[in-house]
Amino acid sequence: MIATVIRFLNSIIRVHRIIQRNRNKDKVENELFSMYCDDKSNNLNLFFQYLTEQGFDATEKTEYYDSIIDYFKNKELKSYSDYVALGEIRFKWLNEVNYHNIIKLIKTFKGIDEFLVTYTKLCDYFSNNSKLYISNKLKDAKINITGLSDGWFDFKNEFNLIYNNHKHELNKKEQYDFDLIRKGLNRILGLDTNEIINMLTSREVDSIRESGWFVIRNSQNPNVIKPLVPYLEELSSKTQNLKLGGGFASNNRFAEYAVKIINYYATQSSCSCGIFPDIGLDLDPREEYNNVNILETQRIENKWIDYYIVACKKCGQNFKVFERDGHWVFYEWKKLSTTKLYTAAGAP
Image 1: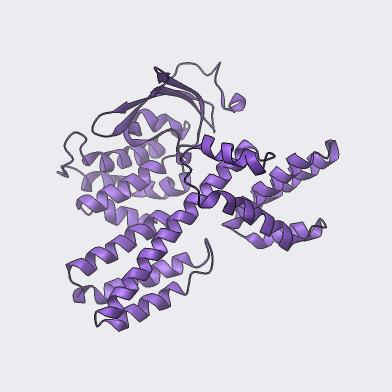
Image 2: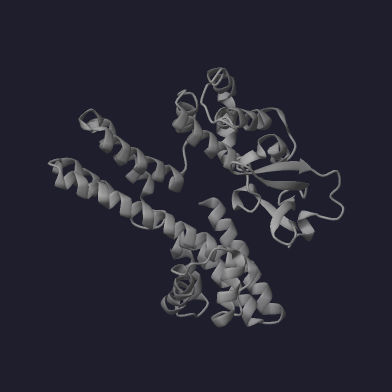
């Protein structure tokens, strides 16, 4: 919440500076829309109050911004350039930052929409198969959800309680369906420290893959990794001699990479991006969780991607990231010796 308020206050300062300098309406509109996108999944009341204080019709303004998101929402858009091409038709003022905000929000909406459809099907299944009492408990748990972010953790706690109280009654299909919902919740909300520890040390392939991948894609997020540092010795010892299968790329890597990341935070004082070359096999540099700017994309015959040049947003360190396609798409991150030409400050 504190980080949200700080971002919000910084946006207010930027809006006022724009107005003082040249009153550029497009720049003001982009900043306001960016504030809205950020606040939409956190605390919309802050933004609503600010609009009112600045003399805007807050309801009209937020409805307009909702209509912008809806304009893109149900289209079959696969790339950033697809969004820009469509946006140019009606919203020429949108800048690059806000296109990325729109893409992020739509991915969130789609993920939540798909999850809720699956959850409703589970409730209906129990209603139709003589387990109405479980269905009613699941429906009551869902009442906790009151927005994009509000009530989800209470919902998750109640859902897990329902499962633990009734798992002895469930057949294999019902166990599978519950597990599907649990994984969906973990994708939406993430895992807490205790969940990560329990899953990484479970010696069960699915739990280790899920928790390990969560740690890997949060390698640049100290709020996730630092609380795991006190458990490094336990995690390291309990993830030895695993035999998790995986053929060409062993599933053991999910535990190994997770331990490497935690060890890096425990022993290194340099920027966390330094871990990329050791854990980057599955890390698509285009994904936001890597916290890098893509500065250059090199293609083969103007078709297939050969490599990216990227810069860490925190320290400016550059990497050359090769993209390769074998049994699956994988990556090789190489640290570059210079940041002279490509720095975070000069990145687009």
